[in-house]
Length: 529
Image (cartoon, rainbow, N blue to C red):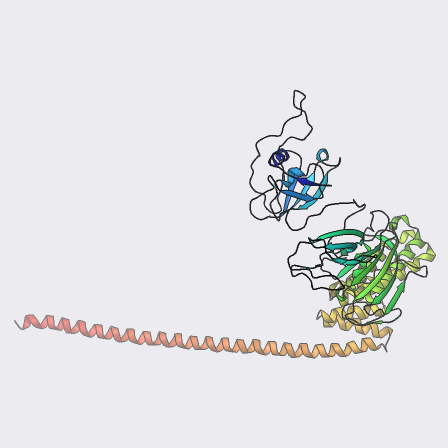
């Protein structure tokens, strides 16, 4: 890491297509080329290799004007050897991503974003270790701020100060005197001795600031849970006012059931052993529903705060690797997870849990006689619960298919008959709905839900009859109008034909009279001679 000062000769050398240190055919180190290869300007998002050096440049933000570093300019930043070839191609305000080949870098390709501008110059006095903070990260720093005359205008205490990156400090307007420090005039150059004490990574999980994770303790390694892995966590969940509504995993049971979408997405970003503070907005929590939590009620539209630890995560065994009892246990856990999701209105995710559970118990051959009944009962329960999800999602055809699977096994299952009747009713297939209701009442004559649905069926029939009557009335009305119009058209056409016939007859008579007169005249003429 260094400060680079470019002269005209250095700029030309940096742009030369040859790699420093390479020898020519005579064994002598080659001199920098005098000509700088010209090429069309890069467009934002476009990437290009610079003069065959192996250094690649991708333009992220265009700069201002056409000037690039020349003699007398000083460019300051954190650079690797060889990056000088890229800096001399940059304009003021430009942001570019350079990929430095190993021969020009540290022995391995290094991508580095670089900003070229005026306003902030950094000189590294003591190199740090570890990574660098990013946008949104929370950093703790110690600093001392001086004016050009050496006057100290701001200073941190021994413990430093915490803030989020991108927060403004003094701005162009300066600052009034405070805490014994003098005025900072507007637009004044400041010298700041700055030490980065520590930083906490902050991640915008969903990309819209609705789920934000701040890492309190880094985890082990780089691996994160993959889809299908079993996740174990511990957390304490609070509302914004500090009210604790749930504690999970502190009593030994810590297998995460993935109840809310926000926490589900966060778990996928955590390393083993990581501890994070997570803020979840209502859209990814419980929405506008009031929910009874483990320790207190969660009001509608609540922002949720979790301090969560990723205990461990392991991939679950494939169903074919399990024995009968293990399959039943796995399916049972998935069913309970689906039930929890259903209670919070996450019907699509609950349905996936039920479908996954059935995958574990769909093969009857792997079960003993004692396990067979447990498997059948669990399968029927998952089908029925999945049918309830389909009803909530208004997938009535899906509901009919799932309930029919149950009825193939238990032909008089009242829940299956009731839910299929609901689906038929909503699909306007009233006759089939009525058949399922009657069959359900044969098994349970006092079933209130079925009786209530019979009343609804009666109302739907009355509405349908009324609608049909109106439809037929409109149809007959249109038919009458069409018939009347046809009759009128026929009368008009007949009257026209009769009128035309009379006119033709009259015209024929007139023509005959004229011919006779003419003939008569012609005959009279000679006799008169």
